[in-house]
Amino acid sequence: PWVAFPETCTAGELFGWYLNIQGTPRRSFFEQLTFYTSNDEEVERLQEIAAPDGADLYHNYCYRERRTFVEVLEDFPGVHVPIDVLIDLIPPQLPREYSISSSVLAHPAQVQVCVAIVQYKTPWRRDKVGTCSSWLASLDPATEPLIPLWIKSSKLRLPADLERPVVMIGPGTGVAPMRGLLEEREILLRRAASSSGAVIGAA
Image 1 (cartoon, rainbow, N blue to C red):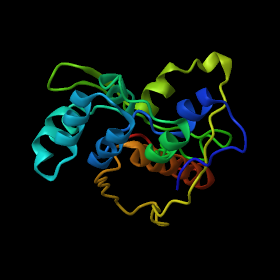
Image 2: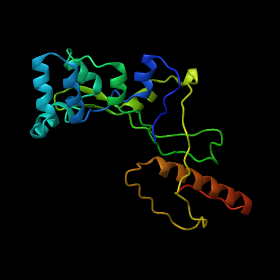
Image 3: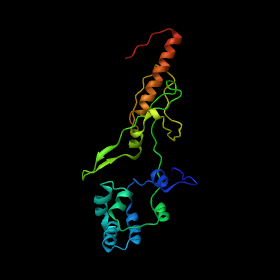
Image 4: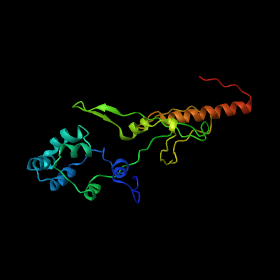
C-alpha cells in the first residue's frame, strides 16, 4: 500500500508528503534523465551510470551513498524534467509500519511505539537521517500533532494460562511487541492475583 494522492494539493505538499523524494533512485531513473538535458557532459555521465556495465558506478555514486532523488537532480543542474513526468518517475511515499509497544489494557486510549531514530554517515561522511523517524522526532508533543495512522490486527497472542512460561524471540521486530506483551501479562497477573487475594511480586 502507499499514501494515496489527494484530489488537490500544492506542489510543495505533493513533493513533501506524497512522493518519495528522499528515496534512492534506480538506474532506470538516470536513463530517463538523459532525455531532459542538453548538456553533453551530463548526458554522458547519466548514460554511464544507467548502462548495464555501469553497475559499479551506480553502486558507488548512488546506492552506497544513499543518494536521494533530490540530491541526484541537484548534481545534474542541466536536467529539467516537466513536473508531470517527474511525478511518474518518483515513486509514491510508502507508509511506515511500527509494532505497537503498549497494551490496550494499560493504555486504553493510547498507542505507544518504540522508534529508533535513524542517523548515520555514508562512506563519504555525508550525514543521513531516516525520513519517518526524523519527522517523528521533530514533533512537539505539547502541540498535540495529528499523525495519520492505521492499526492492523496482531497475530501475537499470549498463552491463556498465565502460569505458562513464555520465551520471546523477535526476529526483525525488535523489542516493541515484547514490551507490549510483557505489559499486558503483568496486568493480567495483577488482576488474577487481586481476584484470588494472592500477592504477586516482580521477579
